[in-house]
Length: 240
Image 1 (cartoon, rainbow, N blue to C red):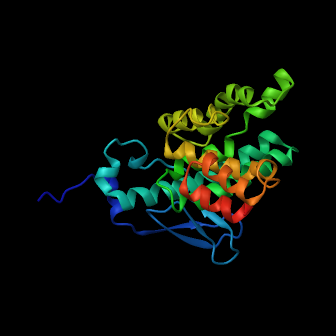
Image 2: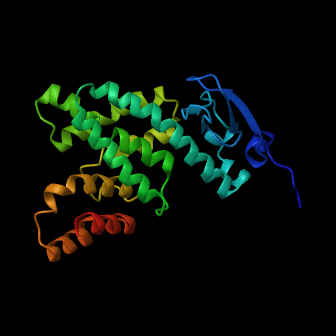
């Protein structure tokens, strides 16, 4: 059996500790080579490595090379690292519009809970949740309306610029933007990533469409409108 593998994957298959200075207090922080961030033991701040591409970000054989467990852990860690950058971009984009910012963060929170059970991709779903409504601002400015189809029309171009600024690759940005371009059109995409975003968004928006119904109507609504098992489970906890 050939036990050789790509040298670029060595730090992922055989991780070792690396050390970085905390930007808040200067304390030395240990971050393993297969991780992207850690918490400072002195002040509690989150410390992230400088954004550098791993071979897993671009190599078509990356998952096969390092194995499912290592690949999935890396992609989850990368998504969590990118999350803080995208949240900062979201806040800068919406400015004083805290309602839209809070909505996106609530959707993100539900999605992260669902991702613990769903076979969906953290590095796609997390950015999609954060940026899914960025088209609202431009739609209101250009058309005087935040109607769903206008959001879908304007959102992808705005999101793509933010995603590239955060260092995401074109293939990932394409999928994220496709989700954003259809997130008011249930059934238009049939992927696990799209379904998690749709259910998370519905959980946040469901206060108006679900809470006024009786329990029997709520059960029917949940069974017919939610797309994932974890989404239905969360909806029953929230609304029943």
